[in-house]
Image 1 (cartoon, rainbow, N blue to C red):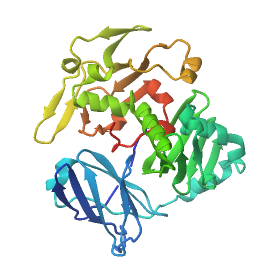
Image 2 (cartoon, one colour):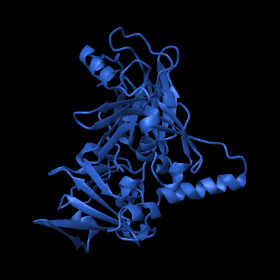
Image 3 (tube, rainbow, N blue to C red):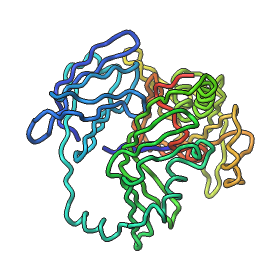
Length: 363
C-alpha cells in the first residue's frame, strides 16, 4: 500500500540525546509569524504509537527507538509539518520545527463550496470506508467515531471524488487492538480511471484488552497483518533475510505489450545493496525499475482473489516501481524513503489502513 507524504517548516534549535537502542528528540513549537510558543500542539512519529503534546512554553520531548521516522507536528488551523528524522540525527543539536497558519485562497474556498456534497456520507460513506479502511476482515472491524469531520466533494467535469477532514479521523480497530488518529491530507478517487490515493499521517494507540484471550487474539492478528507487508519486506531487505522470511524478488521485463518475470540468483546484487556502517542506513538502486515481490508464506485474501481472478492463488504478488535513476534508503526499523519515488501496485494495494501495524511493532 502507498501512503504519500507531501508536506515547510521554519526551523528551530532542537536537541537530541542518544540512549542505548533509542534517541530522544526535544524541541519547541512556535508560530511562524509571531514566534509565540504553541501549547498543546500534537507532535508524533508518524505510523507509530509514539506521540506527545507541547507544554505551555511550546516545548516537547519524544523518545524513539533507533531508526527513521517522519516527525509530524499538527495544530488546529495550522498547516501540518512533517520532517524526516533518523538515529543519525542524535549528534545534531540544531534540528527543525515551526508551524504557520493555513491560508485558504478565496477562489479555492468558492470552488469547494460549490462542489461540496451535503449528504456526502450517505452517498459516499460506504465507498470511502472500503477504499480507506479496506475490504478485508480487519476493515470490517474498524469503525470511525467522528464521521462529522469528513467533507465530501464531487467534481463533475473531472468525474472525481475528493474527501477532506476538518480534524484527525478517530478510529477503533477491534481486529488489531489499536486506536488511530489519522490526520488526513486528502483522499481522491478518479472514476474515469478507477485510480485512487489517500495521503496523511497516522498515530496509533494500543487498546487495553479485556482479558488474556482478547490480548492473544490481537497479537496473532497483528502478526498476520505484518507478515508479507511492505514493512516486513523492507526490514527483510535491510537484514538480508528475504528468502528466510518468505520473500522472493524478480525483475519485470517489458517487451512491447508483454511482461515477463526474470528470476534473480542474487537478490542483493541485483538491488545493488549497500550498507553504511556509520549511519546504519541501507541504500538500494535496482538494476531495473520494476520489481515483483512474491510472498509465499501466506495466500492472498479471498476477497482479493475474487476481484483479481488472473492473479496467483498460492502466494501474494506485489510490484514496486522505483523512479528512474533514484535509490531507496531503508532504516533499521523498516522506514524507507523517498516514498514519493516509489509506486506500488498489486497485493499491497489491497491492504489499507485497517491492516496497518505501526513501525514500533515487532513480532
